[in-house]
Image (tube, rainbow, N blue to C red; front, side, top):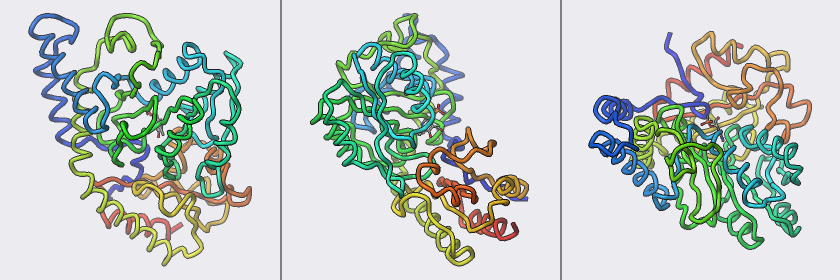
Length: 374
Ligand code: PLP
């Protein structure tokens, strides 16, 4: 049975060159980057070259890139320190953020009694910018936390516009860019932004490594305390092989961006055309111009098929998702779709199909055949 992986928003396969790079670093550059001998200096050089390379692709300066263990950690760190150390008294976010942001903010609200405002989300999953401007008219020290690409429905936020609005209202701007780094061109010098977050395993790099962009002189303080690594902002011996793997993955993502975007967009268009033929009553959850890597659809199946659809596809070797990975085993509806769909539609099966350059037209055909057999 051919297995089909269409769950790339959840995680991605490592590129062979990334494995090669990591193996080389594990074998040859095993020194501790904080050691002053040649082994340490060698590892330090791998570390700093990786930082420089990542900064270059995002048009940031290298010292603004701080390595963390994952996207979740980076989101927690930034939001917590904004409240604890930057005198932030209010966080504005949306109800369709990733749980790494939503649950962090809930926790901060309970712990510090900060004000939390949720910006309105339109029926198509877009953030209501007019509502954001209205919320920002209140004069209170604020951080706005809005993701660039939604991990469930693929809607894309205009971060340049939001950044400018935040700047005009003296608010800090944080964006979870976990689903966009390596997939969209990002120029951090042209966006008025204070903090952003990325995670290597979403762009064909290793798990367990991510980074934060922390704008110069932000005043952010560490979450953990220990050594002087990452300028004291993220102590702990750096995972040099993971970091080198992440830098290699980002380099390859941007080197191949145009060709892979065309290939993936063609697959997405083909899948939509197949849905139109075989399931004409299907609906796209989100906007039709969402990111090319994600398609979320509401299928015209009865509600009693909802619980078994993923299982049925899995039996046929096909991996897709119902929402974000953390929810796919649960029967609770996705918190993102809950903001957009009627109660009736929420009961019907929705699928998130997410693509990478590794997918082929045959994968799409196999998905359609499997769905037709339900
Ligand atoms: N933010 C978004 C938008 C995501 O899609 C994910 C992963 O599902 C995360 C944060 C969490 O990233 P990590 O797995 O690196 O903690």
